[in-house]
Length: 289
Image (cartoon, rainbow, N blue to C red; front, side, top):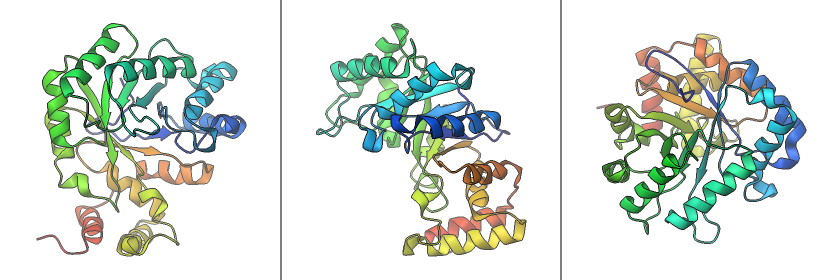
């Protein structure tokens, strides 16, 4: 069980891309709230850390594990590798093996629950990548394999050579970024039985008052639906994702407890088909054909 939504269920994951190791007091407090509310999938990456630098978010989780191990009990921790400063991508066997070992050390674990390839590396043949990932599974260093930001063709090419099942695909999806509805990624996930995790489910903050002009239509519809349902635009935006039959697990990255609670409230919100398609049409800028 990787803590993702399954058909008929709604789950939420929590991501650490905004945190770094210097934030340990605030991060530990928010993680406590996250776990109290039943979230058991925690997402990070070796490249996350902001001003803390490469590996900082993983070191943060490792430090929390030492200070408050109960906050990680029963949780699935996913991390990613394949982004190399200066390259920018490297999925070669040598690089990924070293990256995995470094993540294990920073996280303070003997096995990574879910190991994503963060971005496709055009210079690594999928057969080589598959052999590396299968080797890490066989060595007991990772329990499950995922990809992030891959095209359907890239997923298929990797799966052709991979012995381990592809457990999950993480991609950008929100009521303001609806490309996965038509580019084949969600359809492929349903075909293959892959979990879908959505990063930036609130359009990189674009649903706020000072969001970009190209999301103005989406903000208007979100506000209308929030009034209709007696909730907030944030809750509507999360419920939009959770309604897709893939199913989709939004990854929250907020550091604000109140915003977290707004997102959690989405699980109690039921949008109609008309509501859902109104958001699709707002993002498209035109009516459905």
